Every structure is written in structure tokens, then in C-alpha cells.
Image 1 (tube, protein in one colour):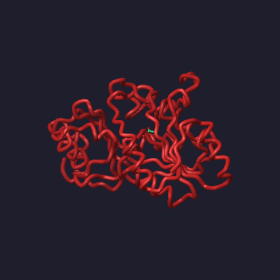
Image 2 (cartoon, rainbow, N blue to C red):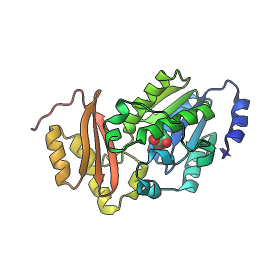
Image 3 (cartoon, rainbow, N blue to C red):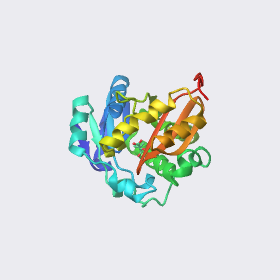
Length: 259
Ligand code: PAF
């Protein structure tokens, strides 16, 4: 598995691949089985799979969330090697932001609601870094988890709006045995919070009204940012102490059996 820390060294590698299909899995590290499922899908679909690990400071509206973001690089690299990844792109902030974020990609509709209403500038940071990564890595396809459903939708819309030449593939949420959606942030949960966290999925999939879900989650110790329907999904964001969890489930055919 090759490791590239500079754009220049990566570009040399990319040039040699010529017209081979390349799949990109963009990550911020602290990898889990959700990321590995994206990697596995990319390996199935493409000749070459590249994973980027870059904790993108511009998408954190809260400095303590950035500082607390888990960093376990050695473990990440051994998981990726085991999974059969061809190359890892590990750039520094200065490589990715030579303009120090003077130029930004902004979207003015979907990025302003749901998570965007609570995390100012978050999706500007996400869309900007994803566009930069696509321009550097030049992927044929890029893989994103459906857990971040709003992010996935915005990336698909950006690719369409800017006529970008990368196909976006959304992959299903991977869950722990109690239903908790896998996330790098789960590493920050202590034992008690980890037990509570499983109740988020259980509550939103329990066929009760949104109002009732809100009440129940509050009683269970969550501070709910929102529970809303978008397209055919029910989306939720809630805090357990200072740790923000998001999740979503199919909603279209869901029957509410209790008020
Ligand atoms: O989903 C993530 O891990 C990040 O938002 C992404 C897409 C890697 C951009 O930094």
C-alpha cells in the first residue's frame, strides 16, 4: 500500500495509472467497519482504490469538537492495508489549503437546514474539501456513507452543478449490534453513553410519531437538535452530553402505530 503526503507525489502515481478506474473513499480517519464497507465496494467496482485521511478543520464550527476528534493513524493504516487499499493520501492542511480557505464552495439551500442550521459553515467546509480532493485524486467514482445523508445529497448536487466527472456512490449505514450507526465519534462515548447511544436508533425506528420520538429521546437523556423527514428518510441529530450523533432510517412506508 502506497502512502502519499504531498499532492505532487500523488499526481505522479495518478499519471501512471492512465485511464484505469479509480475509486476514492474520503475520510477523516478513526476508521471503522462503515468505512471498510465503502472500501470494499470501491475495490469491487474499480481497478484502484485510494483512501484519503484528512481531518478537515474548515468543516468544524466548534474548535473543541475538532480538538477531540479521534486520531489513530497507525490503526487506520493497518486496517486499510488489510482491506487491500492501493494507496492512502495523507495531506497536511497547507497542502490542501494553500489559499488558507480564501476560496470556498457554498450552497445556499439544503446546506442551510437540518445539520446546516446547527453547524454554521459546516457544509461549506465539506463541499470545499471534497471538490479539492476530487481535483487532486481524480476519482472515477467516490463512495460516501448514507449515515451522512444530507452530506451525500449535497455532494451529489455539487457534482451535478459543476459538471464534475466523478460518479457518487452512496453506501448503506453499517450498525453495531444494538443498532447504533457506526461513526468515528462513537470512540468518544464512555461506557454509559455508549449504552444510551443505542437507544437513538431504537427510538427512531419504533413506529411512534415524531413528537413522541422527541419526547422519548429527551427523557432518555438526549438533547435533540432535530427530527425531520427529507425525501424518504427520517433524519435525526441529537447530543449525548457534548457528543453529537446523527442517524436516519427509511421513512416512506413506515406506519406510525402509537401516537
Ligand atoms: O464524512 C466525512 O468523513 C467528511 O465529511 C469528509 C467527506 C471526508 C470530508 O471531510
